Length: 287
Image (cartoon, helix red, strand yellow):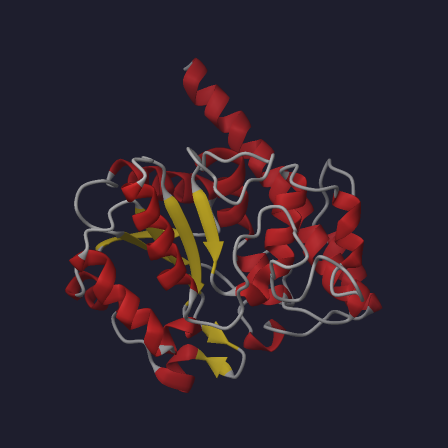
């Protein structure tokens, strides 16, 4: 009973952090009138769970990350949520979030490395490349005798890129079983629903056919996110890379943004910002 109560408190804390991260996201995108709020809001719970509960990582940032788990954001356009989670996890001061997409900011619209932002190891946003990089990092850890894990996040629209499928063949063939990848299956991309732009078909069947261990979870439910990620960790190092198909709702947490591709890359106006913030009350402080 005590264990259950402790876990319930942890989930409540994660939910509060997620609300604050969502507040950060809409304020950041509004502040520069540019950015991608829809996917950021949809993936908030996943990234909060990953950094605040699941992943073994160190806010004293090192590019080598010896003995640490790694995370690579392949769909780099959802940088607002990643920046917020990194800041709230202590990688840099939360006040820096107000510089998002501003001139000379380290918080570019797509993550880059030359600014030296803690937590960012590769430039991303050119879709389709993150899985290949993650495979390389995972193989490096194996060669170095480092039994840590490598995590990645991808968009479902990103799967229309050919390089993804080259990497999908490579990882099972080379038994890259310290890799846990996740696809944000929200069914939306910048030009419309994925089924209309270019249907992805049966994703579970596809990844299983390539030789991956495939799991599924609800990305907007903390209990299910934690269950899914813990299950993935328990099935690592068993000869197969792991792919999690994560169902999310684009714009989750802000009712007028939810489920619409129109909020893939559009900033809220002043009235919409206030409406969104009114739906995201929490016990934390804004930057």
